[in-house]
Image (cartoon, rainbow, N blue to C red; front, side, top):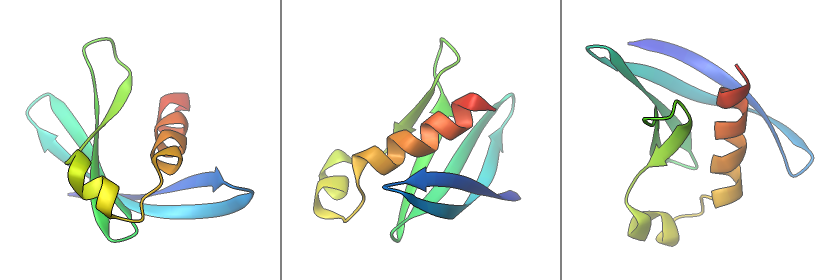
Length: 78
């Protein structure tokens, strides 16, 4: 399992989020730890990144959807 750090600027703060890459054959998922919640990010059919997860759990957690969007924007720029 490959580990990496994703640098994100969010609400005028520089964050360095820990993540790891999980490979499934030709597909890879990036699992990011956001406030103790594991958010899985993958490429869709068009090549864009999208987040996967339980919407109800995210509503109850302290994870901001805009932070997830910021992580996806960083990944998309690579």
